[in-house]
Image 1 (spheres, rainbow, N blue to C red):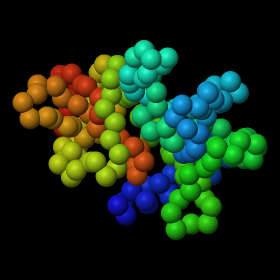
Image 2: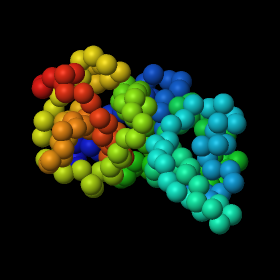
Image 3: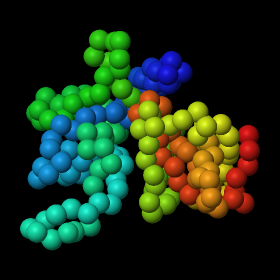
Image 4: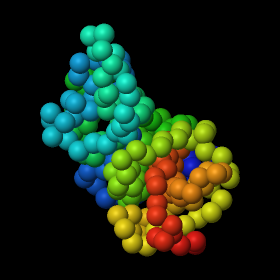
Length: 192
């Protein structure tokens, strides 16, 4: 746990040194059935964002409809400058920063490399599996691997295997926020 909080604090410092745009972890406090959730608002404003999406069956007018919805409704990553986001946060009450623990109002940021790696991994497969930090066991982090070839070339993470399954999955993390496992072909895996 201590390693994760150091990594997040380190990421905040690195992002601030660059000046300009960086990845902020934000909160969307709208209800799950809101007409204008934060990710749609950001899409309309042409601001780059990422929110992990999953397919779910929803009831619409008495019919079951398959919809793509956020995995965690209140988690959204936004790539922009602090000044731009401050203006939006001041205007929209349901859109807020996520703050680091044990600090006074320091927003959480994610390193650009980590975020790009996570986005690339999640978008490379049709159905990634997401995990919250408390769902990840030490066994899931035991075998570090690097991927050579394919759409995930150069990606590093932990190899997750399920008993009885021939499918290999790569666990890619955003420290202390979220993790995703994506399917990987065995010939691309190299142990570190």
